[in-house]
Image (tube, rainbow, N blue to C red; front, side, top):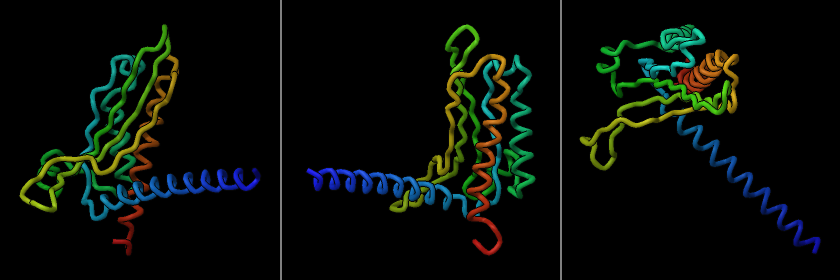
Length: 173
């Protein structure tokens, strides 16, 4: 019986290790898609009206994200520059709210880097695809705390910056 329990524990630890290894491999893959990235055009989806009523605007989120990226050395592209840049990279930020009660919302913040990708078997076939993403579900957020969504967007931008810098630091490329 003890051997069986030990075997189950070992199998469980192995499965946890395999899952963690797969997650690390996915993170490594996503980070690699940022290597040599010449910059990003930042696009913020229109914010829900409830957020705008708290004073948090689409323009503020845009300015916050671009400011963080710029201070970290990530070049910001205009829309025109993006379309002229190989891969046409754009960072898309979304905030979703779902009213869950009288003054409570379920909130989710997401960030996706979209780039032009191509099929290796036929390089003439190109499409846009997300090559890096991050998100956070904030759970139940009271109406009085909706402004904290701004902090969550900032945290995701910082996560992108860390991934970008990991593969684009001097001497890494």
